[in-house]
Amino acid sequence: MDYPKSVPGIGLVNGKFVNEDVVGGLPGSLIPATWGNGITDELLNVVKSAGLEPSENDVTQLLLAIKRISQSGEDKHAADIGAANLYMANYVPAISALKDGLTLRFTAGNANTGASTFAPNGLLPKPLLSLALSALRPAEIVGGSVCSVVYSAARDSWLLVYASGGNATSGRLLNVKTFTASGVYVPTAGMKNVLVKVVGGGGGSAGVSPATSTQYGVSGGGASGSYAEAWLDAKTIGISQVITVGISGAAGAIASSGASGGTSSFGSLVSAPGGGASPWIDLVSPGVMACISAVHQAPSLPEGTSSTVPARPVRRASRLQALRSLDMVPARRWAQEERATVSAARRASEPVTVLAAAELPMPRTSRDDPVQPALPVS
Image (cartoon, rainbow, N blue to C red):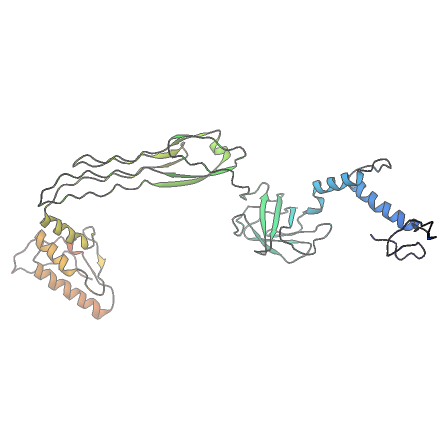
């Protein structure tokens, strides 16, 4: 559309129409019939495409027609003419270039079976991503799905913001609710899915008994509560769900074990048991404490199992002290056996397995008897 510049003798001034100037003796511009009819036909086409009947007396029809066309989104919807995972559509008017934020819709002809692409009007196909910005998973689009996509220039990809009937996760964050005490969860209006996270109550510590100057009293902390989470839809949750917040385990009295933490739950759908309590063992003397510490430095393995010996012996003196304290086997004989094993491992340059020192089930023998290992060294 333009002024009738190609028509001679119509009196355009600077390319535009002017009125007659009687005082100055200048004639007014003429409107050629061809140009006038063309303008009228173009405006009527807009009115008719919106389903309106043209009326000479209604001067609001053009504006109403534009609003109706915009609401229908006919220019942004087309049928898919591609194949599974390769979606294509032709729009009118044609999409000639991709711009950031461009929003289009198409009705899919096939379900996707994995990563997919989308190409409007023969442009280069671009990756079709989920709202999590990852490649589509199977069945996020199904045959007949009405899909809404938005082009992201930063990622040079299309984002699938909606797909009817498919498994795509769409929408927005409506609310975050945190319960520190038991109560009732009522879904926010419009909620479709909920990510539920549950933590059980922590266990309590054992109480320590008063100790003398020659005793130790030790107590560890209780175990943390377990954790659970689940992705639930509105149909599964229903109108509401009872929330139970597990209480923390109480600390133990003097020389007593603590209490276990309580179970937290989201109705009967998700639960997380509480942590175990710390047990009270007893007071120990410094000698026994040193012995226990030395034994715990060696690997704790069940009887009959083995562990790989490192390239260089670690805390060898502590293991021997443990053996002497527990009076399990002659320490000197065991040291000789262990050194021979490690030496053989170094020469062979391959892992050598032996039983852990604190777990060796060797019988007590006299110093003149040979020490027989419980299991052969490999």
